[in-house]
Length: 256
Image (cartoon, one colour):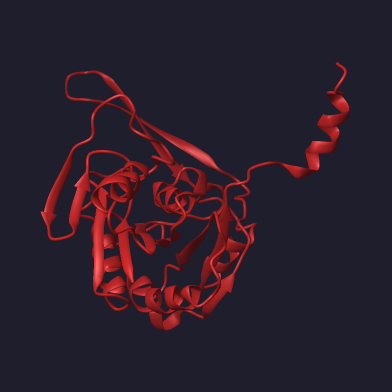
């Protein structure tokens, strides 16, 4: 099985090294194509206003000067065009991708681009406690549970145009209770905290930070992670709100 690894935390991210370890337990045909730098929060964005650069770091190991979506497109359309991947694994992200945060996630979006291209794709994220900062984030649960979750998903029929979103809880692997299949949930409170400061030259700068510290898990994936389970959520790209179709049909009759 040919496996493509990517992420949104960048080519040197610790979580990518964890993902490579997981992937090599499944296959010896591993390719890495990831952003050169941290692209957290990039969502499903494309680079259209500047050229992309590709840098090779070793055999089947590349970085791309763009977004996670750019990396997947470059991998499938150029680097691996004569040997397309059978599976795309995106992550292991440093931090949760739960609830509505999946819309911001470059990790999820890389898997989304893979699924759009017809490649089976899985996004993997390591939830961490609010007290963890920098390199203090532990990937223990992802390291131990990643392979078994991926193998279980590969044993199932593939759902076209659908990606699997996996989140590992912020606890030691030995304390993980198991796996829960869960719907995407919603935070009860979402605050984009704005950090305001002044640089050494006297100019203001601002920093966005998503803050869910006051949130109560309301949706199933949020609850699963909070309860100590690995959450697995199938996501697809049909964003149509079916319940509104009839109302809109009535509001816009054909003979307007």
